Length: 526
Ligand code: KIV
Ligand code: ZN
Image 1 (spheres, rainbow, N blue to C red):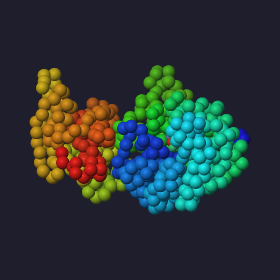
Image 2: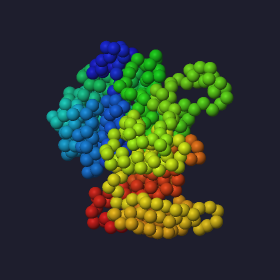
Image 3: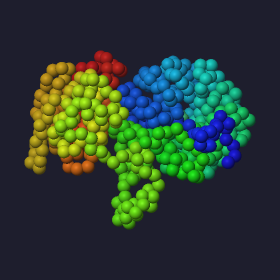
Image 4: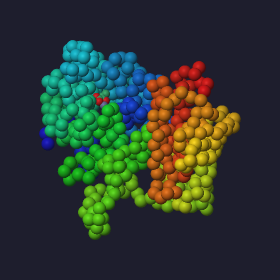
């Protein structure tokens, strides 16, 4: 292979070159409609990314909103091993705001960008190419005066003129950029072309050896992962990606697919990543739970069917030798067979130990709350699995300060209407009860919540999935509410689908109240 930037060295142990995994789930991923996360959720995701061994976490776009600033700032305070990165446009104010948010980080990176394609320069920026060139020099110089680690991106890089790219990249490196990212912003390129572009830039930018080149691919043509690997073949040594491939429009390149392709085909691609692949399933499920974006069943690596073998011929082959139809093991991505965890006679000590095994660190009161929910579940469900515990903890922890709390629900369902729901809540510490009817039990339940806590928010998504197999499985429900251009996702889990539905709706409503409180304190009454 020709043309790789020299900021890269092969590992002495394996002889393989390291590909830097730059995760942008919390920035490019979170930017996509319906994927917004609150601070507590972003911190959970950031913690999981760090545990997975992600090299760079792009935590947000600090100038975009106070919420984004706060999230980048908190993540910068708490993450210690991964580099924490914040995005900014080319202006000084943007860069200063990013740096202010990033300052507490042990390892910080400012990521600044400007468009370089003729189309973007003319219509989006309305700037002449030379003015863009000057803005690159000014922005990178300013960022580098603040932070030692600066990434510069040429937005719409794959539709930019390669000769112009060479000139601006040379200037960006001269001004102090340590990573050069060449995004396929609109998901337009194809693998061969992207390999050629990367190689061309690395070979023709005179100081390319002073920076690491990076790929950032969108999935509009379904080629984001293939293009990312093609960029690696052309000399890129950083890949930007998101968990489950979430992102603008058709999404970004999926982290799990890139990492597992590099690992599974290590014979053909002589690289390695620092990702603990056994954490992949946990990260994927965590993100789906938070955003309500479930991955399709046949999605590579993390889809429900990714390791399922249905046909008789395949099952027969698998029994004789797993390698017949399996190119990687489910265990390698952290998909372990459901293990029976605890029964209804299990004590608090065993419960706490299990939480620790699952990597859940809870405070004393949180353990007690989760334990109470577990006891309740164990009374109703024969077997309680790891997945049950994870869903139950998700539905308990972090909700201590909720203004609206679920107490109980009785529903009349069936073919003879009207269906009705009797709901007891606690609102700001006071009990509240109502009976409501509706077009089906879910509608009746949500009408009851509306009656007790009137609100204008509109239901955008209602989704149910079974946590484990069997008719006594817990239902995990996601509800998305929208109000004044803001959306929030709520989750609820319970062996009773309607209770899970009520919990999910109430969770979303509580999150909306927090959001309202932050943006308009005067609008707090119901
Ligand atoms: O797709 C893109 O061009 C981006 C840049 C801001 C890096 O997300
Ligand atoms: Zn992007």
